[in-house]
Length: 101
Image (cartoon, rainbow, N blue to C red):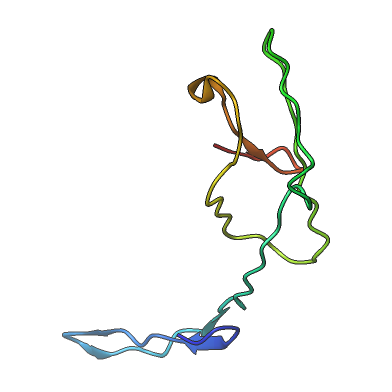
């Protein structure tokens, strides 16, 4: 199927008694694929400190000002320097509070 294209289909049932009437056509539209990359920090010198005590929540927002629906999110790597990386939990959260872990 091609991107950003409407498709139409309908069915006509057949059985041992013969062919039936065509059913009402149905349509669907494929998505237009647009791949954009976004980063949380513009400069490598900007660092987000993580307190060494307690269980703090540290936020690094990524603002996306494009209209449309996000269907797929890929995070190739999270860069950080922390003595016990295995103790860190990372979550991706939208403004609508949908969580992706």
